[in-house]
Amino acid sequence: MKPPFKIGILASGSGSNAEQIITFLKPFEQIQIAFIASNRSKAKVLERAENHGIPHFHFSTKNLAEENILDRFEPYQADAVILAGFLAKIPAHLIQKFDNKIVNIHPALLPKFGGKGMYGHHVHEAVFNAKETTSGMTIHLVNEEYDKGAILFQAKTNIEPKDNPTSIASKVLALEHFHYPRVIKTWIDKLREP
Ligand code: GRF
Image: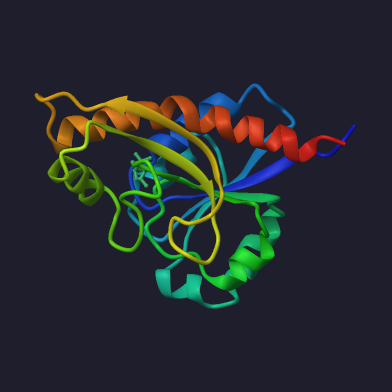
């Protein structure tokens, strides 16, 4: 029997996606959440980790840019890193360490509405202002360019005339909650195939 596949989750905010991932993956003993870490010491995601008994810690955004961040991760022996609303650029040393094993979720249909500054409500406002008739979410691998790694999965939602940036955000978040845990599970299963 293979050892469990371990993931680390990085998040900066509420962590509602992290919560969905934790709950969805719980029955699968072959996948373990080794740690949850945040670059915001008061992020709600750390409370969620505590409530689930998952090891968790805070690091500063400055720490992240330094190579010794790898020492903070080392004890948990993660095989992959999942970004769930993580609002800092992933540095080259982390990308090299987890080569093609960092996944991100973006609340729009990349390659549109991606790149620096395109996060949270900025994305939904840009989609609304561009009078798009659809939006959605993208799950992709992380490389050294913001929002440009290989796309694993996308899901769409229609934008109706009555929608506004807030309602678009909640439609997209519902898609994220449903699909992100499932796509992660499928991706890990593939990585583990003999
Ligand atoms: C999500 O929309 C995600 O796509 C974006 O930030 C939001 C995070 O929400 N990157 P939460 O912290 O998971 O609740």
